[in-house]
Length: 147
Image (cartoon, rainbow, N blue to C red; front, side, top):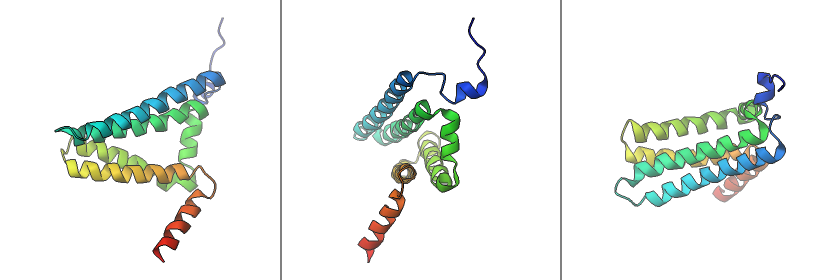
């Protein structure tokens, strides 16, 4: 008989083997990148801006979700909302939602494109928070370029 699994053990991804976690991470991440590339390719169609914004956002969501397979959803959420990346997380999630709203409900193509650009910048800033001193290096680089 199978042992009873508690919620914490299921949510921390330890119930999956390392190989399984890496495989699903790769599948989810590649699907996210494929959606983003597909969205970019669809940009040139007559209603392409809507398709681009939709696929680009879904791609970013899939890529972000892929790390849940490595860390587990609970650890991922805890890491996302740590004080050092709280603002980056909230801004990134805000632009993911605003992009979808602009495409699906508001029908504002220009706004959707602007939100995609801001989404990309927010996602980059969020990702840099996982690399020690990366944000400081980027800030230093930009300030030296502006002087």
